Length: 248
Image 1 (cartoon, rainbow, N blue to C red):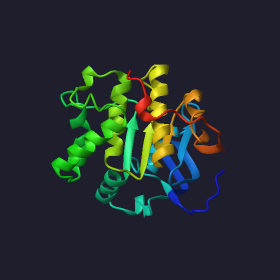
Image 2 (image 1 turned 90 degrees about the vertical axis):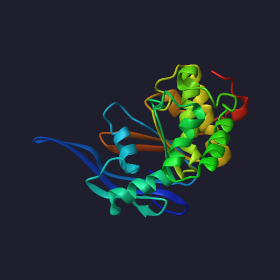
Image 3 (image 1 turned 45 degrees about the vertical axis):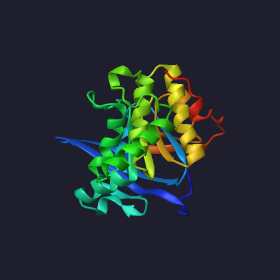
């Protein structure tokens, strides 16, 4: 397992426990879990169905409460905060990319990216500038006025990545980000995420069930029964530049 030396740590989780209760039945989803993620790391999380991958992501990001332990993100103890303060902290320091694109159908790509910025008080002109900049950086500068129905699956996922990054988050959480894509589009999206991590130092924690996706990340964690059972650093091939991606 990764040493808990906290130099350059962005995320420090210690003794995290999560229990789901239904009537008299209790299921321990996470069991006294420790994890450290340093700034600029890209970490993949793999494991069989029911191993706790998505629960881990939801607890470490503060989307779900925990039943024990401590989670610090960017120096702040998430569960020492009020719900409102945690929501505010998440809005300013985290980005999210999910399997479902969750784009607003009647909004253009640019409007989908700028909406979260407006919701946290960014001035409209600045929100539009950052939205256009991020869409250009993910290879969609020529598609900014297109609605989701006019974009391919791969393009829609790039919009969600631009949306996640437009707020300049400290960390991006990606839960099965290629799950709705065919293999070619999945490769393009992973190229984009790897490029953002390598060239811009974006910290990314990515959950996947796909071994081909897991092989693309520099650090791979495996889970079983709510615990981390393996933590290895891998040699990976650098992707092409974002601007070299074919549109798909």
